[in-house]
Length: 251
Image 1 (cartoon, rainbow, N blue to C red):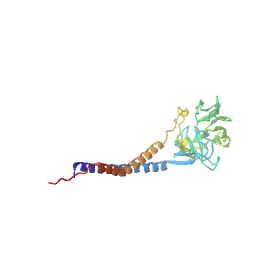
Image 2: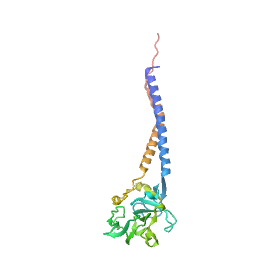
Image 3: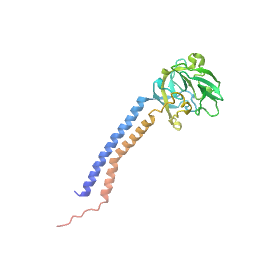
Image 4: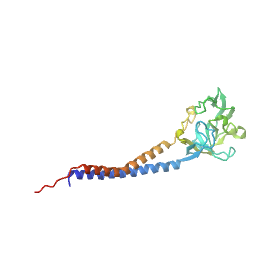
């Protein structure tokens, strides 16, 4: 056996080992990303347009399962409140226990007397269609509004229901991190900076981006590793076909 043949065989074995490692690692990342996502995230279909333009009616979102104590101002949350309806609803948290909520001063929502910038509202519309008298959110509860204020059945509509229209923190099931469908709206939700300077600040995005990266990298490794064998064989045939035939001499 010639040195060239031995070298090619060595390279072939190394390539096979590396392709196997790539496939194995890819499977771990791919399946691990899905399992991680299934454990932390829950898909929801938004039933109404009360969160337009951030989230439209029929949009599918991915929401991270969290405890109610983790909720911060500005979060878009999925919750259930029996006095509001029997289905999960999606609204934005604008106040937590102890906050004084009012609307509107110069057309803007105020929290504890501070005007809040709300870039997520529909263009050309104020913070609320009717107005919210100064209301203090009870401890352990949340004040929620839809981004489409004129048509949202939110805390501003339920002010007379008791507890100043607020809902308990433990009513929250999850925090929306991203829109998954339709594709033209696919992406992570931005955290609103208007609440960043308030006590507690704003929440950090969940690990969804890391999960997506793990899944994509895993898929690339699996496909690349699986393709190595057929590609290497084809390249080997081409090299073998291109070699000149050895002619045996008579001694």
